[in-house]
Length: 95
Image (cartoon, rainbow, N blue to C red; front, side, top):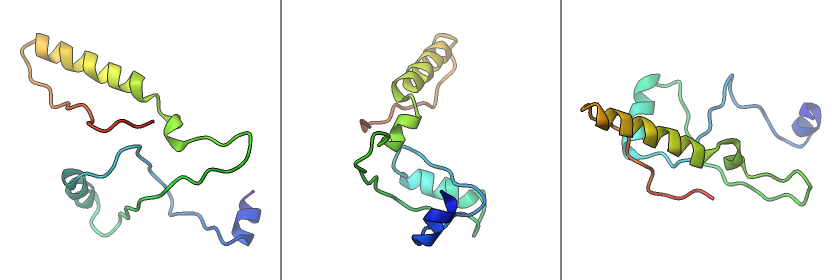
């Protein structure tokens, strides 16, 4: 597959590629930039639907409702203990 993709003009990205189902917020942009000055590239991509049996949405890599449920339970435990939680649920719905 790698050879076929290279023949078609595709190229691997860096040593590692990190993805997120969420948009990069202004605060997140500052935080990412501070992690490794000059060594981080951020880009946005759009999924292209292919007419194949295995056509999947990249967001399906995460169990977003399950993750949100765990964060909410953790936040509730912190609140019950008197500590404050910094978690704020994402306002956008990803489908």
